Image 1: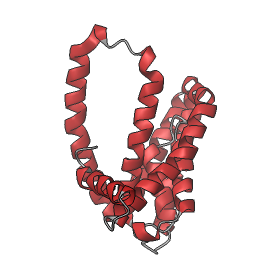
Image 2 (image 1 turned 180 degrees about the vertical axis):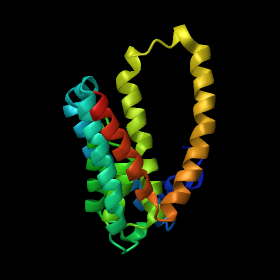
Image 3 (image 1 turned 30 degrees about the vertical axis):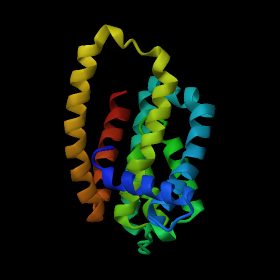
Length: 208
């Protein structure tokens, strides 16, 4: 993910540097960084306060199925999202906080993190590409935070080779998946995933 969005991450670094030096620079990067910080606050609070409760859903497959159906409905509703197409310069603090809340709620099994955050961005009237980029860039601090929280539980020494192989495979698959998904987001076709989510959700409810 960091590799795929390296240009955007570099803009953020440039924007932070310019802001610290009080120089004219990448305002876009600085604003993007500020929005990511704002969005990360509700995500972190929800994660800390409700993590155990949300994770208890893993023992209730029918509930997970229901959450998948909810994810599908949210994705399907993006067909009727606002057509404003706001760029990062017009993205407000309230937009960022709403997307952060959506990411926090996505701790619930069955609720898609990327699906909910991208959809929320579209409902806020953000540009399609910006909704996708912001969703994935926002996941970086969330993943790092979750990794730190779970670090003590990891048994790294007993499976270094497995971890390395998994990392390489995940990297390759991740790049392909991001490329494919960003094309779908730009084309405004993300609602197509709704049928898969609803179908899988119904299947889980029927089987369990």
